[in-house]
Image (cartoon, rainbow, N blue to C red):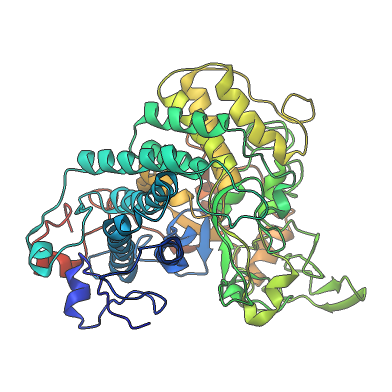
Length: 560
């Protein structure tokens, strides 16, 4: 079929690049397309291209270290020309434009399809549009709203919308989707977006915008569907072999065979296994995990600074590789005197390339990721195919709990929701013993708990960035250094020989769950790897892309 339909995108930077944004080759004439179910499904499928669904990078947060490297966010250099600022704006509006085209042409099928089926298709397109505007609103704030295709002249004339009105339109789209989408699909049906996904994503944007009543109500409605449950094993939920878990409310499937995979995984893998150990968990993240008694590391008698992975919440060891444990067929040990390590499959002693005394570019802070990492990462040119989970049931439970806490509606349902998530980490039922159960307390205490729970649960999933933005913690946690190990000679002399490996004592943890590593730096026991920066005067919103400001007359966000 010929490619005749031109999507008129709002972004004038796209129009100025003289590259037509054509719809997929599978689609036909703009005059007749979308007149039957097959054509509508093909058009809707195009809205789920992975490039259109943006996730925030963990490297923009305090959970991350990239040797001595920084990003435009963590170096406070973000501006209207920053690559992802421009690309994410452009691609998100591209998806909105495509959804608008589908919606405007959908009535062509009105005479051939049952009304319920047609409304389900409309609900799907409106769900996508609502998700895209949710991303724009939460990141850029002052965005342009349109629910129709625009001529070039109209696109140039339209201005930015009141954020409250954009949120209202988002809710309207989600509500239509909630009313018209199925709750689930049978085993012989192609899985498509569901009512639960619309409820979950509505709850998320409501929480992000501080609308706690809407967040609570939508999250509870999703829970009450009874369609989702927590995956039994937190550790294997994120592996490539775990497909479409009952915890996943909305996901984008991946397949190496079909050319939809995640690449570049070598940077996340330990050096013994052939990786580069470049992108690693931060010490800030390591010290944020509670101990197995439910206390922070500075309050718990169970914390051992010489063995920082012992007696911790199980998600700590499932997220970061513990010292002395097998990982990708090698015993992982960054100790500066451990020049050799074991290859598990052969029991042979081999050079320990995860020690900086052996390999200079081993992890700069001794930590490497475990969450989602398995031997599949070593195959297929470092491409892997785990489900791209957009939102899962644990998030809905914690959204519900946080919204209730912030609304100061403290009751047993709040701690029940948190305890479901926490108990799963310990592989016990939330009503059973065997884990540090949360009990009802003050708003301040429960706020601290639910925020810590989100960090322990969602590390390396792209959620930490919006959490520190909406909690207004970014100016605190991103204006402190990223610390790491001393160079090997100094590390032996100043830390190992005096018996202070891994740390001499537990760092203090403040009310926001932030560990203070500065005293160890002052004593010369750790090294500053990178000095992060965050400009609170502007960075809680992203800038509008400069091309939009210059060519469309959009107003730039403050202080950019």
